[in-house]
Length: 224
Image (cartoon, rainbow, N blue to C red; front, side):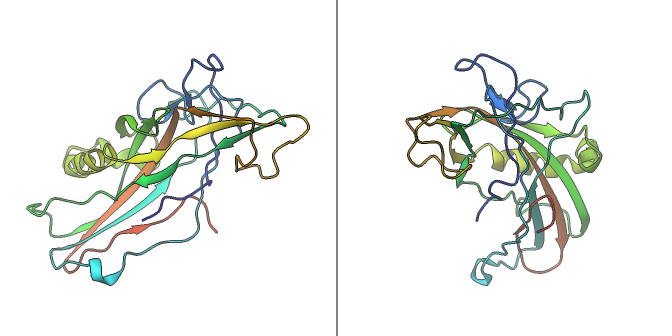
């Protein structure tokens, strides 16, 4: 299963060039999503395609549909605020790439038999090795409000339990020479140096439970 690729472009938050954390959303380390010190671009993750699992992975337990998408940062003074910087012409920001990023699932003994589409969100902070440094609920956005409701605690628990196991190829700032600027604004081919950096990502998971088979779908923010 894949995670939407560069639909969100990381924006750089304030901090020392090599000592600070780089991330997408401001609001201190709440999820592996809030640490950035890059002269970064605007992070705008969006993927149009949905990737259903192969039917051979279906089970007869229940239909727990989980739609995952990357959230775009919000403006204002809340936790979603981002301070945007422009990368130098000789720099490229490389988004983290998932190595292990399975969707969450409800436990087999979950009492839920039906559930209308319900969205819960997480702030995920990745360190410079691509490991989840911290993951926490994100409920201060309108589309994530259901995560603050006690009745949805099991959804939040399932989300965090899975996301904390995720692994990524780390995000990085790639430095090029003036004589050989980057040919692709999203790739580090030919870079003089590649600097792995921490980054913060925001994810939304929409759970839907029906009688029947289990199917997991992923989508991205924004249309395609």
